[in-house]
Each structure stands twice: as C-alpha cells, then as structure tokens.
Length: 191
Image (cartoon, rainbow, N blue to C red; front, side, top):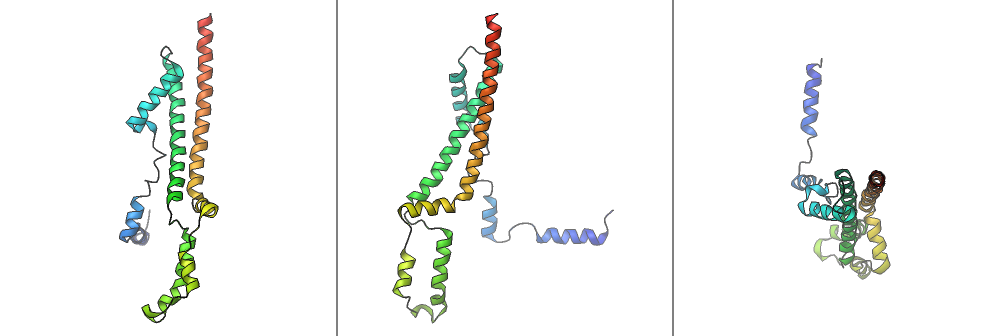
C-alpha cells in the first residue's frame, strides 16, 4: 500500500508534468498525430477503398472464390499504400524545392547569431556591415539547395522509407499467399 507522502508526491509530479503550458506548445502538441496520415488504413478512406476494390477486381477477375478475392484485396491495399507513401515523399520534396526562400534551420540560426551583436549594440542606429548583409541575403541554390533539403528532411524521409519498406514487404507476402491460393484452386479444377 502506498504511503500518504508517496501519493502526495505523485500528485505533485503529475501537476507539473501535464504537457506544454504555452499556447504555441499546446498547438504544436495538438498536431503531433497529423504528420502525413500514412498510418491510416486505406479502408478508413471511402475513395481509397473504392480504388482498392477496383484494383482487386483487376487482379483477380470476377469468377474467383472469396478467399482469393480477399488475398487480391490485400495486394491492392498494399499497392495503394505504396502509392500513398511515394506521393507523400514527392510532395514533401517538391514543396521544399519550389520554395525560393528555402533555408535550413541551422542556416537561419547562424544568421540570427551574426545579427544579434548589432541588435544588442546602440539600438536601431547601429549599422550592419555590408559583408554581413550579403551573408544574410544569401540562400542556397541548385545542387546545394537540394543537398540542404535532403539533410534537413532526413528524419522525415527515413520515416517514409520505413513505411515504404513495410508496405513492400506486406505486398510481397500478399502476392505469395495469392499465388499459392490460386495454385491450390487451379489444382482443384484440373481434377
């Protein structure tokens, strides 16, 4: 049985550690689950469900038994998921590449560090040297911009890669099961 001291201590800790306190922190926390929606099943979206059914009918035809139809549906679900992952990756990279003002967080932080001493000086009348202004105006272009984007988005791209590998594996096993079931069904009809 817990002592009164321990219970009070636990309650005090719970009051202190109940999530973000600021409005910005609470807003950011509220969006934690809304990254890209790749965890959602295709069956939860009516449009994707229709696409799955259409693709499953194309895979299996119309005269298959229910077991083979369900296996074709699993292949179709994996294929639609694979398309979703690849589309999300494409959107992520294309939006960043289309942004003409794209800069990495590290670059922005370094620029703030450069300008901070001038802001702390004598107020707004402190002149900023021309070489600092040129550095502040510089933005990556071409291959350097692409490398910067890839570097900044490594975590997101890595997560999408994990989704893609999982989906490819799911599709592979679904195809194997489908082929085995069709072979068994073909063996039954030959007799």
